[in-house]
Image (tube, rainbow over all chains, first blue to last red; front, side, top):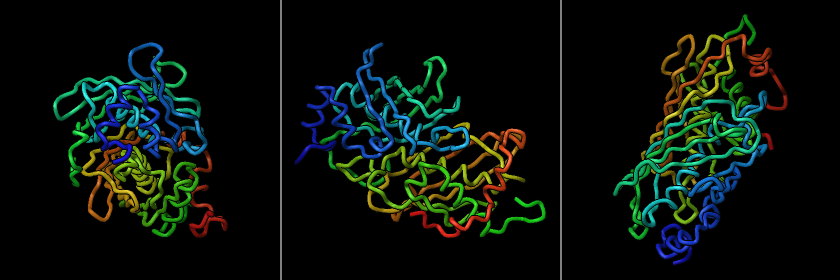
Length: 160
Length: 169
């Protein structure tokens, strides 16, 4: 009972409405680092944004955002994008992530866009690009694998 | 670091405690340094509700685990070098064995596998009570002494009264 990721009806309803904010409300770490999403003005999917918060800084000398915070932003983006873009309501659980840091991420707004490269019966592959001033100069690229769970199935403890 | 003095294990633990306390993100989350030697580091991230990634099921955010692995592997780099250098992350790979559960601290162990003239290769593992959660493989770029700010090593080993102990309030 109750709203949440395990509630198939809630998941289907929020997904139908494109209510990514409802999903973000259940992801405290994404809220802490300041992740938001909006309909992509230049495409069909979502455009993600990371707030340039003081507590997201990882290097005070430059200063620069913490690379791990940028990775967490990109993982959040990939998860939400997959939940929206999948053929049916699925609950993604991360299996692995690989991130390349291309440029220093300054303490300014960071944007990200995702591409669902494969949606299989059990596995999804998402590619993410994050940038700041210009999309042609990404600060990081990442690719992630997710297990696509049936939200109505009882959760099994243990490995992905 | 003073040229006539090889840092002890206690020196390194204090230096890395200062290193993670200077990083605003890890300071805010209260990250602790349990051990630090040239052979590896052990960090402890206390539980905080904000680390949650799935409030419905009480699971840790995978990105918080990536952040911790990046920090732990980056911290392991410093004692493994002849002299501390600024080493940004080149790339990082994280394998998730099982989700972290809310309410428990997370322990991070990281070590340097290989140091070359241009890159430091590291690996790290995260644990909770149930066992290993995730493994990370991080490569860090050596910017070299020329691109390391003057006073970097001195700042790490500065004997400041204010952070003698880990209580930063």
